[in-house]
Every structure is written in structure tokens, then in C-alpha cells.
Length: 548
Image (cartoon, rainbow, N blue to C red; front, side):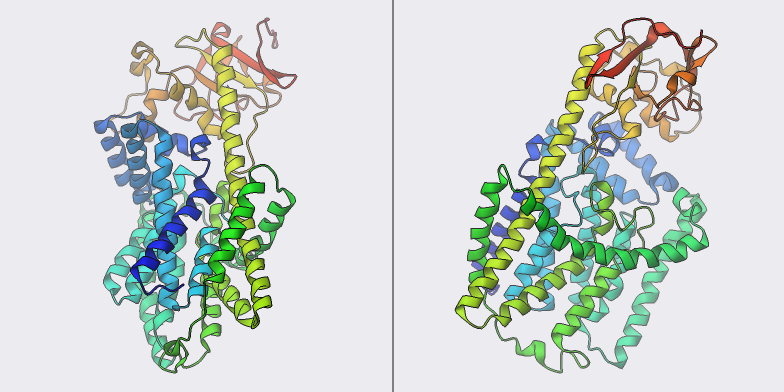
């Protein structure tokens, strides 16, 4: 197989589309909303055109409230509003799928531009597509993060096509979306230039341009008082990037060994069908890939210091290391759930290294028998990575099932809610292994997203008066409606004030309290208490004595 013909490209894209869909979106109809989805996706879905316009405008101009990422919010709110037009948030998973697939195709084009060697390109693209260290491909909130990765890949391809101005505009846009991809672009001059004395001048000019871009964003964040910048001291700025760059590459590469082992030890259910089918498919794919001579790649016109394999190895490792320095909020040891996004950008460097590794071991095999063994080994490897991706989908499906079961119980147990009702939950919640079922600040708002309460319950006149539109202004539809609050252990000692329930942000009885909620004392008749008994959620119907 080569990439010389249109028919071959169509087959390649079709195959990549099938692998991407099955690996990450096979169970999309059984997936739901998780964590930040309840703000970035569900809230715009409940708005009309005017409301979502005001909402987006406010977040664009309030730089500090968006962590200086206005483009991120524009993307997410637009996707959420599309969910309203579609009428079903499951349709948004197709948009998510489209973004992921575009990135996978762009990586294939990128690898081909580095070295037009089919084995390197195909296996490298598979390594990126099935990258096992980052597990949030099917997470709607991360559409914006993967869009930032799209901007990075387009910036690389533009730079390699000598469209440098466009490449700089694209990479600057990534700073307004999700900045952790930005440092990787420092390597752009290393790909197509000779590694000689003139390279230093090109690298210096390129680095100064990128430093100026980053400086503009940092100054803007500082001026607007963006909280994350304010919290960074000198030692954090110095030590955190070093620690992340040392730990991150080791963790992300080790997942290529750990995840297949995980799949092998938990091979059951539909994996017993999917993994063998992919094994056969990868055998057929790899057996049709041939190495081909590439004279241009081996001449001194292309490289003057290092051999081609060594050069790509250095570049792959450099990309891997530079994927981590701007990850200040998530540890590079994270491998599950939303925190695993810390490894997202590392997939590009890993793709180069995987492609080189596969190319080298395929070329070691000179005889037909050894070629068959090598192809079989690689087919097992990639099919087990697909199996792991399917497992992640199952875990996210289970997380959604936890949510549906909990809220079904709440609705059945509380049919008599009134505008003043506060539902307190004294029970553990199943969170799930990957994307969590419940996020602290999301629990109080979810009931309002399930029910369409009567408009007479709004009581917006009770909200604080203000001349501007603070962030809580856009959450007003959740304020003063019935809510669900989780309780901390020993909550009984904290919740009573003058014989009534102390409903206040300062009260430590709550697992989380919406900061824009109006502090007040709530009569016990407006309280519903749900507790866990014998593994089930039950309503406390007898009087509960607390203090007096």
C-alpha cells in the first residue's frame, strides 16, 4: 500500500474512520453528560438564541472568567447550542467524532510529510489514534481541547508548506483555546531545514516570535487578574514544568505496554469478538504495507548531521517532552479520566516513535516466516489497544448508568417538591473510573436540567441587584429553584442555626455549595433528607432530632 493514488487515500481515510469510530464512539448512544458537560454543553442547550449570544459575549470579554481562553468557550457553547437545535445531545458525539477523526487524518498527513514510508505513516497514525495514555476522546467538553490540537497540527502543516504567517496565526489561536499544545510548535523549524549552522538563526527567530505570543497572553492574564496566573509563584513556575517534562514522557510511553496487558487480563464480553476481528484486519493491513526506497530521505541534501532514523527519533522525543511544560493543574502521572488530558499533546511525539519502532522491527524481518511473526505481533498489539479503548467506553457507559439510577431514585422519592424545597443527600455516590458520574458543583444544578419547573417558581426578584452581569447572572435559572445538595460526614453538628437549617456558603456541612446561592435559614418542612440504607437510596420520613 502506498499513498500515490486517490483510491489509496480514500481507502486509508475510510479505514481510519472505521477504526476511530469503533475504538472511541461505538457505544455513543449509551454515553451521557459528565462533569463540565453540565456547564459547557447542557447550559447552552437550555438557552434561546439571544441568551446564548449574551452568554458567549460575556465570556469573551471577561478574560479572567474564561482563564484567558475565550475561543474554548465559543467552541463549547456553540456545540451546546447545536445540541438544542438537534434536540438530542447524543448527536453531539458525531461532532466529537468528526474532530477526533480530522486530527487522526492530519497526523497521517503530517507523518507523510516527514517521511513518505507507508509502514511509518500507517503505524504512527494508529499509535496516535489509539493513544492509550489519554482516555477522554468521547468527552463532549473536550471538543475544544481537541480543536486546539487541530490548530497545532494545521500550524505544523502550514509551516512545512512554507505558509509561515498562517502557521503563526493558527498557533496563536491555540493560546486562546487550550495553551498546553503551544510549546510543541517550537520544533517546527527542525523538520524541513538542514541541521547546520543556519538552523540556529532560524530557531532563534522562531522561538522569539513564540515567546512574544506567550508573553502577550501572560500579560493579558496578569492585567485581568486571572486566578491561575495569580496563584503561580516563582518556584511553581520553575519546578512544575521540569517535573512534568521528566515524568510525562515516561508515563505516556509506558501506557503502550500497560494498556494491552490490561486488555489481555480482562478479555471478556464483546472484546472476545472485537479484538480477534481487529487482529485479522490489522494482519491484512500490515501484510500489504511494503517498505520502499526513499533516496531523497537519505541524501545529505535533507540532513547533514544525523541519519534519518536518528533525526526522527530525536524529534519524536522532543515533541514528547515539550507536550508537558504548560500543564500546571494536572499531574503527569494521571492516566484515567479527565485528568489524563495532561497527555493529549504527547500523542504526536508518541506517533512518530511508534511509527519508527514498527518500521525498524518490520525491516529486521528478512524472511517470510519472521515477517509473519512480526506482523502478527504488531496486529496483537494494535488490536489490544482497540480493546482498551472499548473498555473505556464501557466504563463511561457505567458512569452514565450511575447518574441515571441516582436521579431516577431522587425523582421517585421526591414527587412533592415545592419552590422552597432543598433535597439533602447523605449517601455515597458511584463516581466511575474514567469520566466521573458526579461533579461537586454539578449536583445542585442537575435537577433543574431534568425538570422544567413552572415559571412562577423563578423568584428572580430575590436575586442580588447589580448593574453588571456577573457570572452568577447567567446561572440565575438555577438559583432559588429546588436543588439537591450532598452532605459531608458529621453534617448534623453543623447544619442547625436557631432551630432552622443553615443554608449558607459558609456552612461546612455541604460537600459543595453554589457560591451565588442566597444564604438563608430554611424551615425543616422544606427539607427532604435522602439516605443510603442497604445499598439503596431511601427517604427519611420520621422526624430527625438534631440538637434541640
